[in-house]
Image (cartoon, rainbow, N blue to C red; front, side, top):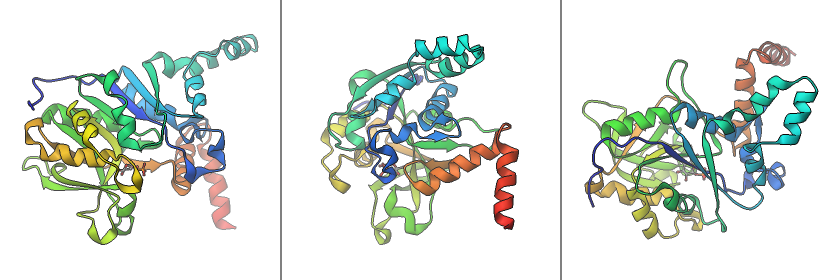
Length: 303
Ligand code: G1P
């Protein structure tokens, strides 16, 4: 295999959104977890905005059974638009169209729930031979104030290394069995960049090689597809993306795999507590809801 040649610009992203959302039943019985609102916007819209603000033009969403609400949300809705226009709310028309107009969104369905690795494998035909970004559809990334959007930071790290790269963050040791965990050697010129030699999906707590957890954002060269084809069922009987990444990390000819240890906050929306925290944090910072919610919380704490 050859090294990626020259500087390749990333214009495509894949957003897996096919999971059943069982941790969020009963809400997810008829509504995809990616459509849960944070204040008044669905989670997936935040994810797509992050991609678009990072310079992505082309998005492939991997959906599954019962996920039609996703396609409807990013499509035109002529009835709603004319209703808003007629009732003097023309400004809202722009708001409801906005994100679907700023990028090209494509869809593919994962017919069987074979895991995250299988969902990414399905994107191979659409992505072709270009490097591409992956943003998990149930994860919101919130970088510190003034910093670039999450996946933009990874895209820039990719540009400097021209090799596949994943965002990671440190988690408390008892949590390592919920994540993909990575290990490697920090770059001599950038301690936040780690050349990976091992990636393990949901290791047992006493077997985890570190507490650096995969944070739901990735940039891959097309070499990942070679390894996804070879990936057998892993943890939970699923085709794990992390297992394919572990093989890619050993393949020096492709540039291997790097991790960017970043400071961005991450909300895993499939987790009830994280979802509630995300909702509160975003409601607190918005000018239309912030002061009322702050007062409400203060009253609660004082009573
Ligand atoms: C997936 C990945 C895991 C990653 C996690 C981040 O797991 O397989 O490597 O750390 O997302 O949210 P899941 O949450 O789908 O079980």
